[in-house]
Amino acid sequence: MSVLRVRDLRVAIGESSIVRGLDFAVDRGQTLGIVGESGSGKSLTVLAATGLIDAPGRRVTGSSLLRVAPDAAPVELVGASERTLRSVHGDAVGFVFQDPSTSLNPFLPVGRQISESLEAHRGLSRRVAHTRAIALLEAVGIPDPSTRVDAYPHQFSGGQRQRVMIAIALACDPALLVADEPTTALDVTTQAQIIDLVQRLQRDRGTAVVWISHDLGVVGQVADEVLVLRHGEAVEQRPLTDVYAEPRHAYTKELLAARPRIVAAGGPPPAPTAPPLLEVTGLDVRFAVQTPAGRRTVHAVDDVSFTVRRGTTVALVGESGSGKSTIAGALTGLLSPHAGTATLADATGSGVRDALRARRRDRRRIAMVFQDPFASIDPRRTVADAIAEPLRVHRLGGSTAAARAARVRELLELVDLDPAFAERYPHELSGGQRQRVSIARALALEPELVILDEATASLDVSVQARVLALLRRLQVEQGLTYLFIAHDLAIVQQMSHEVVVLRAGKVVEAAPAAELFARPREEYTRQLLAAVPPEGPRVRT
Image (cartoon, rainbow, N blue to C red; front, side):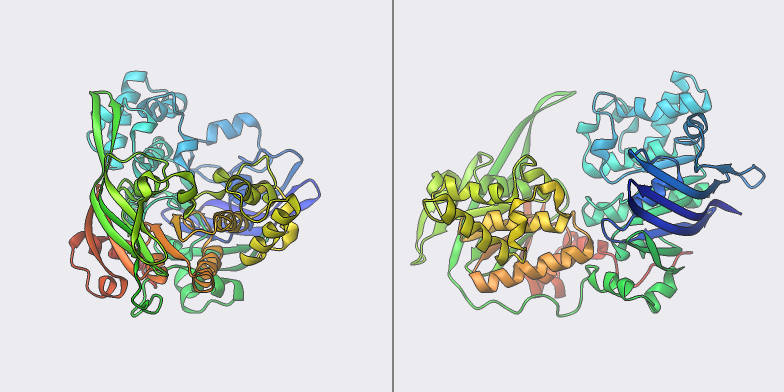
């Protein structure tokens, strides 16, 4: 008996047809993986099927039957009243979304956010619900739950916040759990932990799970059946092992080929010996933070040293909190280090200036591309304005507006975008297009070193593959040097000549990429490698 059975689901917003006649079902204790690129209709499909869609001008037709228990009458969710939906959401259906920072209330302790649904749907007293919240935090692996239950969301790491979201979703023992890209923003070790956690809780509780993702590699570790969507239509819907063994549709084959994975003898060809461009020595960054126990100092980067040679890519890898982005902030002047030097070489190869304390005219030698292009580009300004701003500030690309406009067009063509995109605003672009604009903006500085801080982490795997190919091409054509910050070693292998592994602000291991992937010396490096989703699907027992 299916927990959720959807028939001929159609969603239109205004004149646009978004979801077109989908049929699917998920049974108790099973996981349905819904896969596709951004804009394929994955999230909208599940929101419509569970009665959560709230877009102006929406039209939802078809049927979505939720059966909480085998002996219970099914509840029709399409067209259901607000009262019915309120009784279902948070009780029979739990939700875990991609970004827990936007899902959790920053003004309430996490324990209160867990206990709310218990009081509303189960009628528990506040004291009993609080005790139950502590047990749930313990069940999802939050250390010291009796103390952390009164902490606020900002006092947890990203992986811990996602665990709190899972505790909230499972508080009332729902029949159905919807997990919408729950691991996309997490490092690979935390991602593996979240996947194992959901599967363990599913086995214990018999919950049906709908797991939404753009990555077939992740879905291969969780799903029993896969529904592949493209432009709101199902292009393939079969058991997971069949999809991996014999994908029928070209789009499914493209998604499988694009998923990051570690391969033997993979990565770029060895770089020729080149002089150093950047030498970081003894970098030390500390923050003073206020905690419930009082003020303390966080040692974010502890005596880190490494060298980046011209025309090569050095990767900084590690889990969230390892100090990767803090190093980038120090190199670009966004953070003030406690100690250390970062020497940039001139054209002759001699060290000429400490990049950590460089003036503006020297800082343009280092450019940065951030993880979220929508947050790093002003939404009120056009693409042309965004790219032209560094040209004006540093007096590059000519002294006239016409000359700068011509340079903007050149930069757009360089990153494989039509010059007509110059007049568009960020919200009119896809995620991959916005990231290309960010790359063009960085290249406007004519930098010698480009820092890529998780620059592809938030992109679909197929878009990610195209952006990585673009970066490799630009490195060859423009002679660029990259400092590539990432948590995913499968992507690092594709891009890097040297790898520096960080943990808790310290260097754990540093080696040429080919050597590190073939013979990692440290246990932590081996753990990172083991956390990357394997090429084949997980055999579920």
